[in-house]
Image (tube, rainbow, N blue to C red; front, side):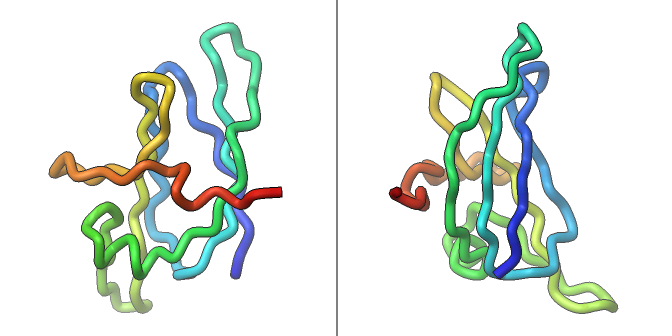
Length: 98
């Protein structure tokens, strides 16, 4: 399992990570508010294969192997995985509890 730290910017209200090669990710998500202040959102265990099977993460075969494209959106004070087709799953389902 790899660790990643992503910061979602309020200017876009989404974050896209393409060409992720590891199917298991421990994610620390942060959110940069319009004021420029960065807030911790939470920590999550992600199984990108399972999320791809659910249709909320894109999985692609490349000459170098399988890669994943992940999009996290921020809407109505909540964070979700979402594909370009509009299918989504709330991110909080995968939160690591202390």
